[in-house]
Length: 218
Image (cartoon, rainbow, N blue to C red; front, side, top):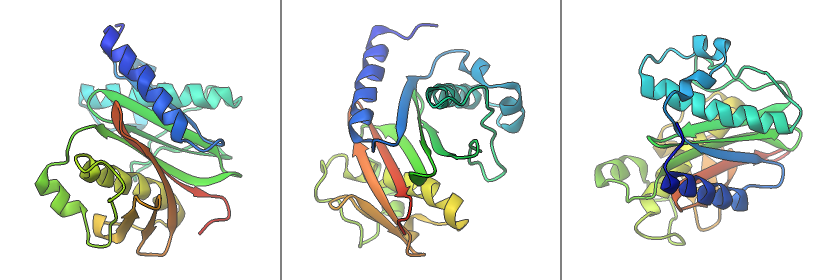
């Protein structure tokens, strides 16, 4: 199924915005989730994903379709991106990456581990975060003064999700929102374990946050 023109335009616009925030060593992509995108799951991938809901499998297929393309650009072909018991994707040797989706858009990012130790990505609608969720996410030490006030909560939420994805493979530490301090003004976050993570984000046509730990950084 071909997405309607407005969806294709949103995909193109988001890809440009994402490319503008990604470090040079990170390859990044997006895709409007389409009917039957679950067919893009390789057989091993499909078996590793326990979700039975069609929408979840479709979104997983869309995200992995992007990731397969990004890896192919680096000469890595036909590699299954399995789902680990923790829920994280398993990347080929020498690579790190991250997948995410909301109800309509899937995103992915990959990078060589000799440049980027680990990374995380998250995508959200460009809409204000509901107050009840913001109350669970925000802590007094967070800094969001530099961003659009209407979207500050959404960016903060997305940043903490992306940071968790980036640091869990390194530290194997389960973190709550209260364990991650985000400074959007400075473009970084710090976890309770002292791990420092760089942040980059865009806000249109969707909120996307990329969190990454450069090789050699704490």
